[in-house]
Length: 204
Figure 1: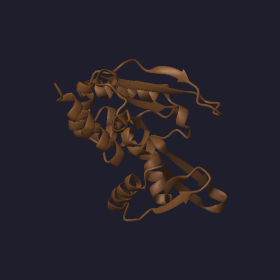
Figure 2: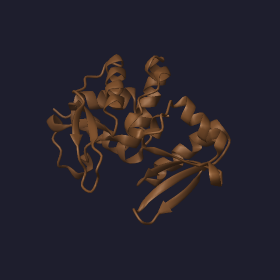
Figure 3: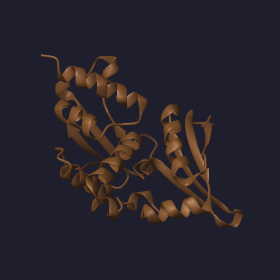
Figure 4: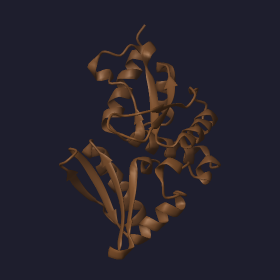
């Protein structure tokens, strides 16, 4: 459900199209996500390459799954108005952790420690979304999970994009390592960066 923050719902009733699509540069993460989707729904998604943007896409065509994810995700039909589902905000810690992990893997960021240019004092995790209210909901969840966050910031405008995005950050390598241990990730590149961050935090 958290990974849907970077997913899209495509509906065309005339042609009976009910499609959920996830985009990612990292193929392995999408393969891991596909296994979760197959386990829950019994339908294996298709993995395709989008040559125009040089990214991978995971696609599920199913009216039943489409309607289930829209309803359960409390999707209002517009990403900019989409808040975190109430049942997740009010849910138990394990539910919240699972949602945050999917959210982070799809729409979160961590410094490229593997390039060796990031100092521990400048370490931070960030989440980006078109919905400011969604990030405010996420801040509530992270606070309940005992993480220290900054304020939701923005709006920011990407080059060639009309609509703004907003950001929520967790500062400090200590908080980053805590996030790695308590929340974790399924994204191969982010897992590796967390490992490097953990080693840096242990350096005298």
